[in-house]
Amino acid sequence: MILFIAFFALAGLGLLLWARGVTVGRTLLLGLILSYAIAFGELCYDPYFEDNGLPAFIPWSERWGWAVFLGGFLAIAIVPATFAATFIYRKIARQT
Image (tube, rainbow, N blue to C red; front, side):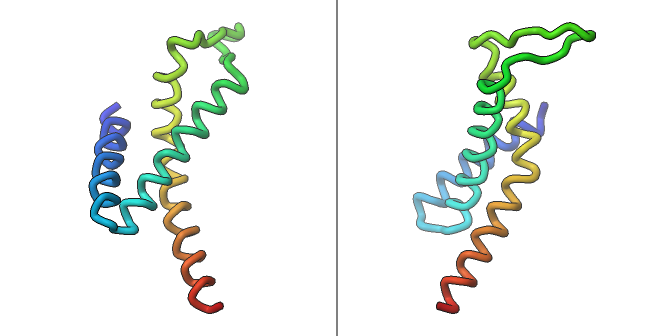
């Protein structure tokens, strides 16, 4: 659980760096927003999970908590991918 709280701290750091005009902060914040948005969209698309073999519905009041949990796991892969995509984009933009 502490890992997911750390991602919120990284989001705050990203906001501070973005306010100062640092590109790393923008990329970090974009990756975190993207990971949590994907997690919430995934939960809204399929709000059921299997609980001991029986499908259980996730109510709206609990979806935000589930999205934070899922988004933390997704951020482990999406944030580095966002940095890689930003690096590739800049490299292509410099060549043209």
